[in-house]
Image 1 (tube, rainbow, N blue to C red):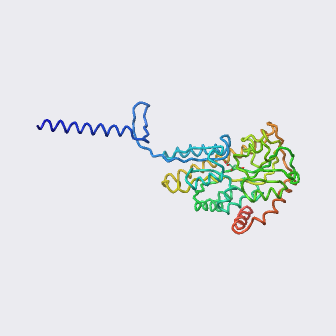
Image 2 (cartoon, helix red, strand yellow):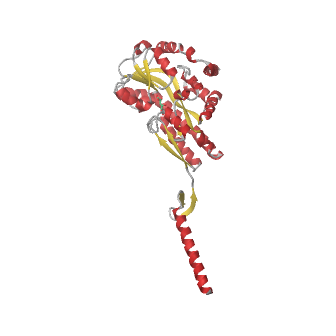
Length: 351
Ligand code: KDG
């Protein structure tokens, strides 16, 4: 009798061990690390959170290289975040991606500051043409107190502004006219970003501006829906605008910053160690991206010419004519909080 009981207990125990063993084998999200490539040395469950980051530019652009750097640096510091990168507006245009951050459908993006003004009004301070004379002045303001205050203001809108990267000084391209003075732009249909100050500036120059998502731009230029557009040299080159545009005029009418941002939700759900790692990686990537972008903007004019474009360098007097036209719109947009920020930026630059 006793023998039968012992046998039954043993059978139950064996069955239980088998079931537990089977389930353990099926447990998902297990990362097996092997030492020497032979036997599993350690089995530890790794809960990775996905961070999808989208941009409008393509994989060749310094902005994407910056994202790759961010991913590499973050991976060195933490193994709990799975960074996935999407170029070419695959997740939408700048505005849609910021809305994606708010809705939780994506975790990161890096828009130009121009469309951010539609979410936080004060960001429009960066849209005044000819505000920054050079990159060093922009760095000083963006990486200083004013830049930080503006980044912090994004949190209330569900976005965590990490740091500023660089898009750069924007220049005009068009299909048919050698533009040297504002009058040459008369009636030219120019695509701008979605921003009222940019639209007003191009109207003041004499053009006929129209806002459009970046993802639609190449086709619009190709199909002649618009005659021209404005972007930094790196974008003109890496997006092959020379295939559909004949002229680049180095108007340098606006320094365009990028804001590298993630959703506030992702940030809040991160541990202090992850937050520190995200911030450090974002800064290393910023320095890398700025360096690559500056090199590109310096050297790629020649490549545009090699690809058949005429690149027009303006004399200081010609440049001044654009600047004078742009100055006329300052009063209309420098109102309330934007005026306060503009005043602070100008004082900082004068120091
Ligand atoms: O990835 C950034 C782009 O989405 C966009 O900001 C580029 O300058 C740009 C433009 O003209 O739309």
